[in-house]
Image (cartoon, rainbow, N blue to C red; front, side):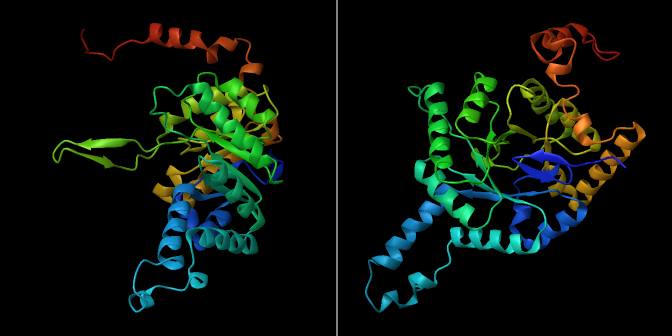
Length: 336
């Protein structure tokens, strides 16, 4: 039987399948079911800095210095008895650590020094085995350069790594001018890994109501191609752990990510659509595929089709784009 274990963020995992950050991780029973299905680790739902800070401001306004009469303030809870979102998140980590045998990776979505550093310390103290940082800032200011945004991420990462000892991975967007360069800088700043790519929910327009609306847009297997390409390019260019996220619904999707060079494969949309069964099916399919082709381990598989191992590295570069366009033929019956 092939060895499915892999190394990621300095952790030895029993296999490369890791549920990524979704609302499923909010409930202890859901996480237990995912572990039973074969999950090797869990990335928790994100703790958003804005939510924590807004709640702290509300507490300060209404509980510390309430602007109301004493009799009218009697309905407000005592400050010491109020359970905040941060309290709930930290307690959730502690409950999970008490029940799970797999590592727990906390997820933090922040954009300020206090948001990453202070909250990161608290997540470590609660028992998180690692920390995933969502590096995302919407650059709406035309005077703000891409370099300035990247410097901001790196400065925050350096400060955080000066305060915490657990491994830190950065969940990146695909919107970097030179992703390999930034990844190299992130490694120098103390990152242990990168997760590619963050999936953003884009606003839509309701044509009937003429309103901007938010809709959850789940991935499909077609989304693996962008991540697979960049994983294959990055493999071997740094010592960082590589997590592939976005579009993994089937065992074929997972295998492509591993062949490209991923250390772990994240699953999210498939779990939201089909539950823990989706993870078990991929895990069983991975084991069968390796056995049928006489692979001894996942390590033997990882990165064997990355850019560094391809005789023609151009297949992951611009030449592939040109070849794809030139080889396209329209379906039968379509006339131009």
